[in-house]
Structure formats: structure tokens, C-alpha cells
Amino acid sequence: MTEESLSDRKIVLGITGSIAAYKACELLRDLKKAGAQVRTVLTRNARRFVGETALECLSGNKVHTDMFDSPCQSLPDHVFLSEWAEVILVAPATANIIGKAAAGIADDLLSSIILAGMPKVAFAPAMHSAMFHSPVVRHNIDKLRGMGCEFIGPQYGPLASGEAGEGRLAEIGLILEKVHALLSQSGERRHSLEQEAEL
Ligand SMILES: Cc1cc2nc3c(=O)[nH]c(=O)nc-3n(C[C@H](O)[C@H](O)[C@H](O)COP(=O)(O)O)c2cc1C
Image (cartoon, rainbow, N blue to C red; front, side):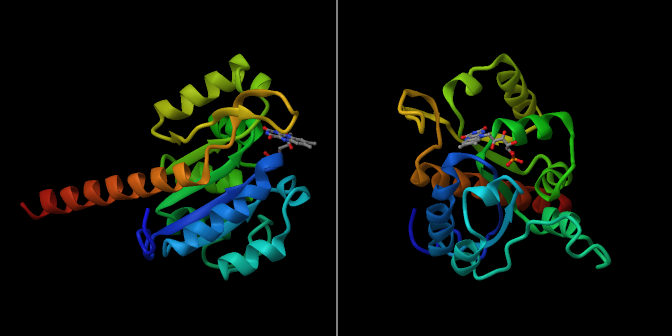
């Protein structure tokens, strides 16, 4: 990844209520350093782990938290942001948001953006390994993969509990590389579709 390698790419960064949410500040800083335009969406539970002020300063944009902040605009935030985003990156992604996305639940701003923006969604899960290996989480991940969503990690390593296991948020560098690859693929696909349309 080089500086400006995500120049002007439009990314919605969804942050959920994981202990790894503090790492989203570094991720946001690096996305911006790579030139991306980033709109940040926090779930209610994520707000217990990471502060809006830091995210607002790092992104240079208002942080979106509430579904009903701008209900009377021509496009409500969940529709506007799902259309605006080239990729919706959920990092860290809790077992809860993965389950809601797999079930089509849209009961807050982030889950509504994900539902409307499918399948251009990349999840970077972070959770205790017992949660990650739960059959229901595995089923939800397989289901979302089958719908075209991407998963980045998690990785094996030390967890917040002090144990080691699979469930650690992927390294920030790996998340950036994957986002870059996804955006390059979607750019190539768009280009070939445009060429087909011209023929
Ligand atoms: C200290 C603490 C750490 C947590 N860490 C995680 C985590 O890493 N991954 C996870 O899936 N849930 C974690 N949870 C549980 C979530 O916060 C909970 O499932 C919540 O409903 C997620 O809401 P959200 O997905 O809307 O943000 C944690 C809870 C607490 C109290």
C-alpha cells in the first residue's frame, strides 16, 4: 500500500461494539493517509468503546450514529451512504452485526446501510474464539460469503481475554490491502461492463 493508493475511493467504515474498536482509529487514519474519502458509522454499542470526537477529527467528517438524524432529506442517511460507498467496511465486525446482516435485520443505521449496500460489504470480524467457532457464526459467515460479501480475517493470536485463539481483528495493513484489492476488482469489473455496453 502506498500513499494515495486509495485516492478518492469512497468508503463507509462501520464500527461495532468490540473491544477491538479502538483499532478503528488507526484504520481510519491509514485509509485517509491512502487518500480515501471515509464516512464513519458507529453502532450504539461501539460508542461505549471508541469516541466520536477522535473519529470525527481523523475522518474530517461528521460521525453517523443515528438512523433518525436526517429523516426528511430526499435520501435518508442509510440510503445515501449505501449508494455513496464503493465499499462498506465493517471493522471490527461483531458476531451480532454479522448475524443481523445474514438475517436481513435492519434495526439501526449500520445494519440498514449493510442491507441496502449488499454485496459490496467487507467484514473484518473480531471476537473471542468461542464466538467465532460457534456454528451459528460460521453459518452466518458462509451465508454472507455466498451472497458475495467479503471477510478479512480474523487472525489467530492473543485475544483481549488473555487467551490465544482465532478471533483477533486482522492486522490493519492486511485490511487495507484487501480493501485496495476489492476496489481494484470492482473498478476492473465496471470498466469491462462499460466496454461491453459500448460494443
Ligand atoms: C468488554 C466487552 C467486549 C466485547 N467484545 C466483543 C467482541 O470483540 N466481539 C463481539 O462480537 N462482541 C463483543 N462484545 C459483545 C458486543 O458488544 C455485543 O454483542 C453487542 O450487542 C454488539 O452490538 P453491535 O454489533 O450493535 O455493535 C463485547 C462486550 C463487552 C462488554
